[in-house]
Length: 341
Image (cartoon, rainbow, N blue to C red; front, side):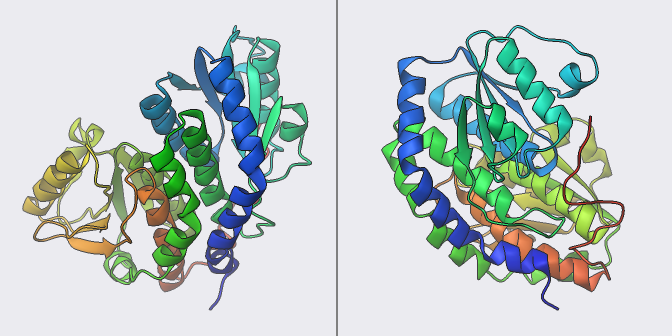
């Protein structure tokens, strides 16, 4: 069965190539502006999958630009009518539709509070884009499946591309330009071990750290909404502060690993989980430690390895949903555009 989720995720390499070509000039102009007049901090505003992209953006900006990044709670403006002072900050709204009333209200409040505003949005005719001082269109094209796929990958790409230009990071810039090819390779990776391992699971932990934590959050959400699995995302460090007590034969782990400063800690966690009898699946371009099942990935820049991992994961999640008797395009009780207030 070919689902919309499968078809739309398969379009990601084309969508990313389209975005990179269309946004090149706008990115350079925006980055020059940010370097000439640096914000004192960055605030992101998003919901759902888009908020997981904001987690990824936070890591990149804090580690490569050197600015503090925090998250705006939309209800502060939409429900409680508060207007925090944001003079000198950059507020970034991330969204596929750009229509959720609380997100739009929060970004308007940020602007009224003195922030410059930037919208990373797929629907450029949306209220979010209309209100923003600057817009980075995602160019993902129409997305009809309730489960966001290519639009999420487009948000990750926009985050990486903006960071590369802002930090004037030539290595990251070259890696971003190669993303369409990387995603095409990731889509071809054999992750059959994931639906095999999780077909009868009742729940699991999804683990990541650094740039991989946003990928873990996204995978956990998709496993909930498309596969009916109680999946919880944790940092490889945070899971040791309490959640580790539940790891064992009844609780599988899906781990996102990239070859950076987090790798040793992730490997140590994987080893501990295996010692406790857990089934552990590791998405990595390197061979995992003994006892873990590798979910293969193409070799990538560490900051972009999670993007490739998400693309490979979407294909496997679609297969898992069907194996468990779910329609990933029509999750129960959900719709494509969620308009919270």
